[in-house]
Image 1 (cartoon, rainbow, N blue to C red):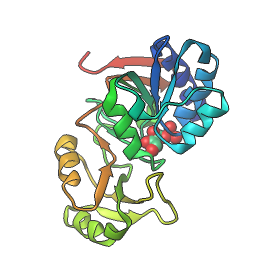
Image 2 (image 1 turned 60 degrees about the horizontal axis):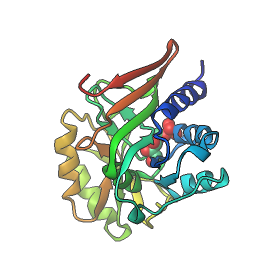
Image 3 (image 1 turned 180 degrees about the vertical axis):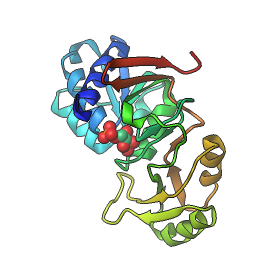
Image 4 (image 1 turned 135 degrees about the vertical axis):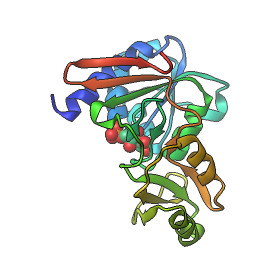
Length: 221
Ligand code: 5RP
């Protein structure tokens, strides 16, 4: 099975987590796109979706799925999204698609985060995938200096502007042994909007696509 087939398999499996008659949170990226396409087949059984990016919003709307602004919604029972890396405690690196800020916001409202990922995303220690950090444009050079002082090698993702009008620094060379601590630390840097560590609010369920099939893992289970 190639990586796309694994992504498609986990996206399909995630449909079982979609509650009928509700609004659900939807992530961003190629795995999330497979999920959105699968959701189209059951669109009459949900009320609609809150999207974590303009790209996902467009794809959802293209399937005729009703979109809701997060401000119109009190609670979401489920949020489904991919990850760039995930560890055994279900802490993740996200933001490869530059949607980390809205992803983290929508995920924070959801009772259950279902991560859909192919087996290549499961790692022992986070950090081989460069950690995305969304930064206010004016602060880019200063934040880069701060990230360097913390031992990282920030690289400006040139040409990319986030849905929020900001820029992304991808931080290479980190070996993230304490993702909760690093997530909090990076949040303290003036000019940082969000960092791509999802450790303080990790996933609750991991649907992992392997050559042997989709494994369902529950945090703490
Ligand atoms: C986008 C993300 C994605 O979830 C992450 O990059 C995984 O993407 P893909 O499913 O394409 O491998 O965080 O900002």
